[in-house]
Length: 97
Image (cartoon, rainbow, N blue to C red; front, side):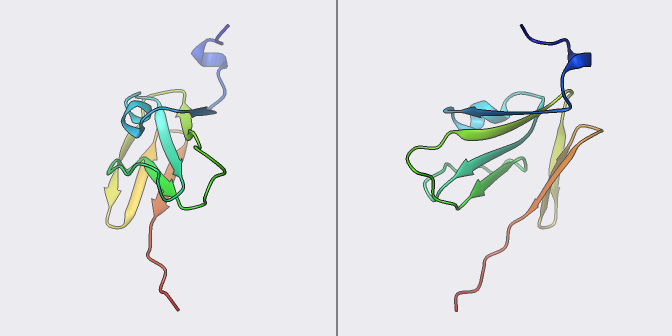
């Protein structure tokens, strides 16, 4: 049984073997993480590719909130928020050395 929205925790974390587009389609998605060099890319500000190599085919990690999420980019900062929780990421290339 799913708890009513008023009793739901402010953040739920799920794992799913779906495409990034499918995961990002829901209005309550705050962030989605794809793991490994072979994780699909997405231009959506809520998607972050984590270069850590998983053991096998890793599911996407999906952060869901209670309400609708707004998102965007401000320069190098990707952000998302639902009025209570915020997610932000800055991706930088590390210099080889």
